[in-house]
Image 1: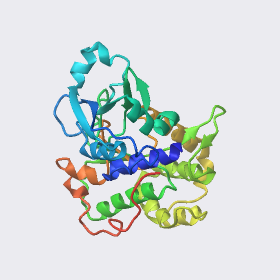
Image 2: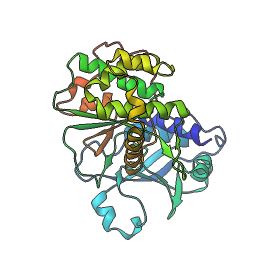
Image 3: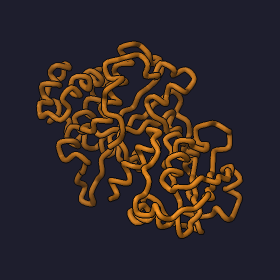
Image 4: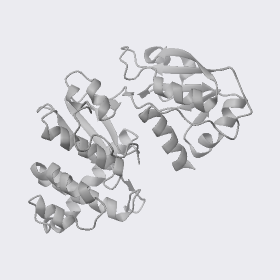
Length: 312
């Protein structure tokens, strides 16, 4: 159930698709639902009220949202907001009542939402948010993926197309980081199984030791990313497959460093895109940033259309 709601929410928020009606509670109706939205102070659309999320919630709850906007600076001074996490904007606080609690019962049960001070807290759901306490890392894009996730692979392929077309400014640094978890005993786990985190290690080794061949390897490997023939992809990219055994422990250590980043930014979905270490967005969303208009997916590249859209 947790996976189901994660997928439903992410599809609605990040693809701009409204949530489906909740079949369990369609008989309960309410005209409007008070929602407090805490936003970033500088009136930047990123970190502000999210129209896509609003539409998704209205469809899901079956009622209009009565939105009260509060600036983060004001919330930090207001005792009624004490205990809420104000690190990521926007923060949505839905009034907790009989209807909202019943309609969000499964989300509350599995931890997709939580109750506090008479509110149902929905944080980090907006795909156009701001990590308010993070320092800006100028001209950097962090792309978080799982190496065998079709959506993450598609995001990488789009970047490869744009690189070939010289649509990405030369001064932009793209950091590909991997989503994996570590058990108490130090063992690694990945959504698509051991073969995925093992491929993560290989890609990390190339990223760190042979950065000039990294995107070439991805271009080749992503054509059949679940194949066991990673060694052939490496050879075609000009990399000796024997280097992976030599640098395996190094790769494991670097992959575990990626885990620290995913925890720091609470990243769990592939792909996740973060601009300058502060703004959550998407590959196509980067095109809305001044100077990055080349990311607009109207170029008709080989990976621009017909590829899987969504998140793992």
